[in-house]
Length: 484
Image (tube, rainbow, N blue to C red):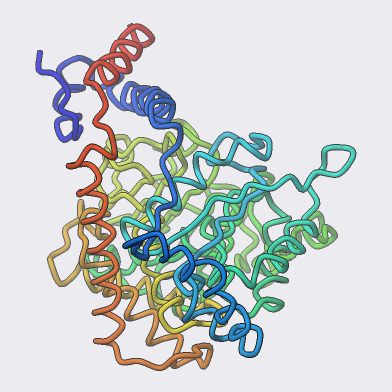
């Protein structure tokens, strides 16, 4: 049997050799988790800080630090906008989390989110040319309950040091309160990737899926399974993109949302869901069987599967049905089962299946675009423009039912997305710097290329150590032992 390559490019082939089709997906998930644990231990995390300015001799410390830097401090004191010119603030993002909803693992304690937040920082740098730092905070009260106001206060206090904030893995309803207040209170973009980022890339995928099925946003009947931060925001983006509310049915854990749901109406923490209940599902459908009858689109972001979405529900859908099942680490139904039930286009959140709906195609370019023009906020228009940017890029290079969105290895998508977002920020009146699309594209391209070349150089020169193949074999052996 062949061995796994260090770049893991033959992962699919190796696992097809060693595991049955029924066990392959489970085995890959188990392997990637174990390898991640081993590699994080090997490197002690995945981010570091290095200088961006040169040191040609001892006296340069007097330039970069005291006494020379005093003139920088007083200049910024007199004009805070100079902080963008004289420091790295204009390319710096704070990745802030209280770790109360880390991926599919729930509350992992404040420090438990560090791996994910460092991951966001790594992707921002490599894919978007953006510097970022992980900030996991303890906002629990004396009873261990997370306090959203502490996140709000924390972000307000750190604003002078950053050009943007990425909120991540905050449980609902706190995530809504935090985002809504900070978007208005801060003079820098505050972005919630679990909600806005997921909605952006999902919309991009749906735009192209509709093209391939010759269906229109204005006429498709759509079911959203799950009413958390992601699907609630997806619903709002769909409505802003032309989908009529009467064509939309949204399910939470207790059933379909509609005006008769007094439990939602009377819960202040469910105000996002109640807004959807007021404008969707006028027929007051209550079951998935009712809602899926003749539906064109299903978007599920709920409990990991593989049995959360039933094949018999998909069989009720219209011809050329579009099914997005994006729970991680296991989709609500596996793509091959969805296809067997009649789905025409299937997308998931995983990279080992076709059509990965991955936030990583969105937030690096979106945040880069916002930073380039020093945007005061990221508007819904900017996120929706990013969705169209992703969809347009994919369509230009060719789309098929198994290839509807860009992937992370398509490097040119990110500077294009950044430039499109920057132009939308200018059009929306939230930019503090004007530039042309080409200027934004050129700067983003240069920064992204520099980040990639620097990483490659550090690897080639041994400053990023190459792991032993034994680590990969250890993860694989562990997987074989567990799966049997």
